Every structure is written in C-alpha cells, then in structure tokens.
Amino acid sequence: MIRLLGMSSPNVQKVHLMLEEVGLPFTVERIDVWKGENFTPDFAALNPNKKVPVLIDEDGPDGAPITVFESGAILIYLAEKTGRFLAARGAARYAALQWLAVQLSGVGPMFGQYTHFRMFAPPGNDYAESRYRTQAARVIETLDARLGQAAYLGGDAYSIADIATFPWMRNRSGKWGGNWDTYPNVRRWLTAVADRPAARRMMAEMDRIWTADLQSMKAAPGVLVDEILGRGDFAAPPRA
Ligand SMILES: N[C@@H](CCC(=O)N[C@@H](CS)C(=O)NCC(=O)O)C(=O)O
Image (cartoon, rainbow, N blue to C red; front, side, top):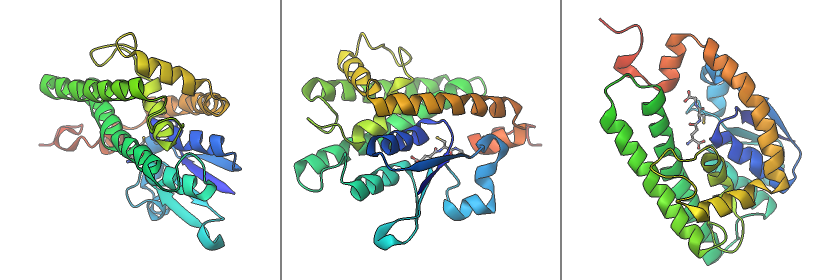
C-alpha cells in the first residue's frame, strides 16, 4: 500500500493526480500544516525539509519500504515504478524531464512567491509583487508557446510534466497580466487534462480537503503562520 501525506496544495495535488492515473492503491493522510503537524519530530524524520507531500511505499525497490519527499522526485519514483507517464529512455524522456524542471523551478516558486507578496506580506512590497507577477507571466507565456507546438508539455504524450503543472495552472486565470483568452494553447491543454477521469477524481478529493485546510488556516495561531510563511523580522508581534 502507498500512503500520501499531504494537504490540498498544488504540490500535493500533482502526486494525488499521478496516483489516480497509475491506479495503484493508496491512502491519503492529511497533514495539518496550520496546526504545525509538519514540524513534529515524527514528520521531520520523514522529510527533513518539513514540507508536504511525502510518499511512503511499503513495496519499494527490492520489496523494501521507501519514503520519498519532494513532489518532483515522487513523480519520477512513481513513473519508474509503474513504467507510466515518463519514457524509459531517449529524447521523449528528457523532453518530459525538462518541462518538469520548468514547473519545479519556475511555475511553482514564481506563482508561490507572487501569492505570498500579494496576500501575506505587509504593505509596501510593490516591487516584489510586480517582479513575481512578471516572472509568473513569463513562464505562462513559455508554456503557451510550447503548447502551441505540441499537444502536451513533453510532446505527443501526456507525462509527469503535465501532471506536475496542471494543479498550479488550473487555479489561475487573469492574475498575471492576461487570461486564458491570451493563452489559448494553455486553455486547450487545461481542458484536456481536466477532462481526464483521474483529474476529476483528484479535484473532487482535493476540494474536500481544501475545506478542512481553510478552516485550519483561519484558526491558526499567528506565531505558527509566521513560521510557515517564513516572515522572519516581520513576524508578529514585531520584535523590539
Ligand atoms: N519543493 C517542494 C515544495 C513543498 C511545499 O512547498 N509544500 C508546502 C505545501 S504546498 C508546505 O508543506 N508548506 C508548509 C511549510 O512550509 O511549513 C515540493 O515540490 O514538494
């Protein structure tokens, strides 16, 4: 059995989508980061970076249990375990991996930082907000151009690059200097992925977990929110 430890965030959604796609039996265990459950010693023993998702596979390589953290590593692990959604060799493998890398290094961090400065930072961050909006728009333009050349990010075949990118893109419209009218190739691809039965199942389950996450977020003590958001010198109450 496979255990997915996570919440409703996009980095967890991509692993959930992959598990739905490959059809392996799995359970979902909600880690309530808004209660600090990711900072416990037990969780840190699974992921020293204290973030979700974490995947535990009782039937890992050579039949031994394995724990994998970092969503990109988990997707590669599951692809290689099942032989699905990542070519074993050749140009198609590297096409998928390079677009996976664009998601991991570009889409996730730029969208994440933009959201942070727009929603959670104190006033006076116009430069940071503008920079991350610009960076997010740039990577969306890059994806749109790619999807104008190929059906999927890795080429003709749906792959872990699409699985990683879909959850981040599905939440977004018109917030980074454009909307999907401006990015018709992204819109076509989003519709195609969202229509997959696995994506429908993932979104239904994640919408359910989102309700619980939202309630916890509203109830979270300020000191914990500061720690999760990494507010540093801007933590409340202000330092003397
Ligand atoms: N690079 C990591 C990012 C994981 C990540 O940022 N997880 C967030 C939720 S999406 C988290 O655990 N946040 C809680 C915290 O940072 O304390 C991955 O792709 O797995």
